[in-house]
Amino acid sequence: MQPVVETQPLAAPRRGHLLQVLGVVFGMAVTVGITIGMGILRTPGEVAAHLPNAWLFAGVWLLGGVYALFGTFSVAELGTMLPRSGGFYVFARHALGEYAGFVVGWSDWLSTCGTLAAVSLVIGEYTGALIPALEGRAVRVALCVVLAFAVLQWSGVRWGSRAQALTSFIKTLAFVSLIAACFIFGGRATTVASEAVVRQIPAGLAFWTALVLSLQGVIYTYDGWYSTVYFGEEVRDPARSVPRAMIGSILLVIAIYLLLNLALLYVLPLGELAGDKLAVGRAAQEIFGARGKLIISALATVSMLASINGNTLAAPRVLFAMSRDKLFWRQASEVNKGGTPNVALFLSTLMVVLMIVFSGTFERLLAALAFFFVINYSVSFLSVFVLRRREPERPRPYRAWGYPYTTGLALAGSLAFLAGAIASDTANSILALILLAASYPAFLLLKLGSK
Picture (spheres, rainbow, N blue to C red):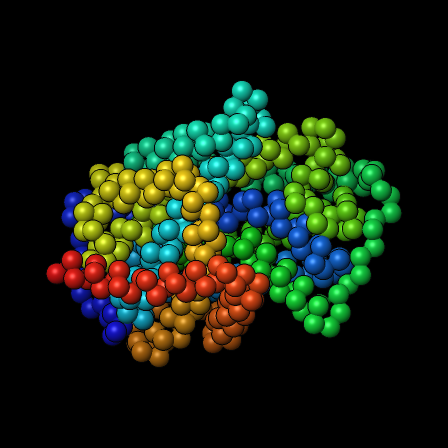
């Protein structure tokens, strides 16, 4: 399969066109909105259990942030070099050919739809805790949330952008307020056990295993740092706006994650933090007492609304881009007057609804698709090397800082993460390989049907 080299102008969609109306604020809002979610509420307890040492605990969050920052440098170069909407799919298709683009696009689209389904179900569960009348109706609440945001996006990208800015601002403000509360009131809090259980730091091979498992959780929690590139051709002045939005937002996320974890250590001894499935909730209860559970339920719900809106914006862009390149049903490249890929939005929403209704059936599939998100990272980092060598004269308004070292380290980190994930979850790894093998016949059928 020969790589795709684009020398012609972008093909116009069948009706309407994407609107170039987004800016740096939106780019930062969509990244913060998608990245900061349930992961940061749950992962600290898992990391503390693996690495029961304050310095190691804080260090692994910093290391994960450095990985995300190096990845941001590399993907920002691709985003300004190829300013098209569609995310990782655009880079994979251009650098490595249509089949690579097909695999990346489909896995990215399905994973994004799966994220929407999972997050909306969690919103349904937390809503039941906030409003007793809705307890036990998580599926109905999830469906209402998904459909409400789909209607909002149907109204146009400007409405979607405003909603993203608002929900992400509220989310950021909520986390900053929680961090401040931890530092203001945490020192006077009294823990259930004044002397925390002292855990032994693993040694030798056990230490490296614990470090890899911790980094896996942290990297999952940082996932979403690349979100701006889903909207490349809709951002005004992408040469300046894309790198500013991407780098600015990931620095903000790193700051929030580091401060929140330091705040947790200030409130709770590490031994009590270790293994807690909702570490931030435990800290909130320590500070606010019985109201802590209610506060965390509200914080989680607000956080996930920004994620729902961002992913509802992102998923149709992947399908739209594939359709425009004849790797999906061509009608999905239609765009309404508001700048929304309306057919792609409808199909994405339909997939999310099916995943919610049949969540038990899709659970194994989504676990297997989780492997592809790191593969998509790896393909994008590899694309930077491929295009630097193959198209050295192509304009690059932003060049990855520290290349080739930062890009090489990000690629090496992704491959190491993938190897660790395969070793720790062999069953889903095999299913992911089966899905990969099955994708090639599907690709050939789609190509045949588009002729």
